[in-house]
Amino acid sequence: MSGRFYCESCSHRQELVGDSPKCEDEPLLDLDDGEVRLMLREIDAATIRRRNYTIGAISAVVAIAPAVALSFFSRTPGAVPVVWVGISIGLAWVGTKILGAKAQHPV
Image 1 (cartoon, one colour):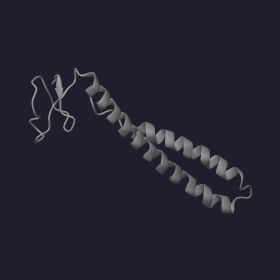
Image 2: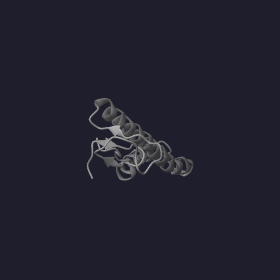
Image 3: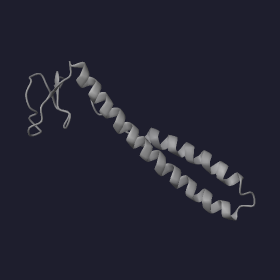
Image 4: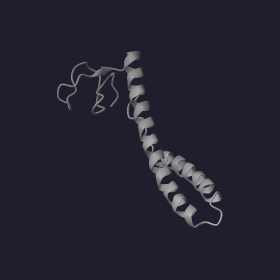
């Protein structure tokens, strides 16, 4: 269903102005307004950025923990962390591509 007015909470769209029929006391936003479209894009960008940072941080911790453990037992301790840092960067990149957030708002 396409419509000019949009509910940010439930993504309902309709042609007539008013409140969202699915969300109590939630006004519909006018998608023809440039400021509304910009606000929705900024909300999506912040959500995507926050999720990607979280995934990257978790991936780095998961990859670096074995590097610290292996560096204690390695004969060449300098090489192990370098390899694992590369692995953690790769893991973070793959994680954000697979599990990263997508834009939620249709603008």
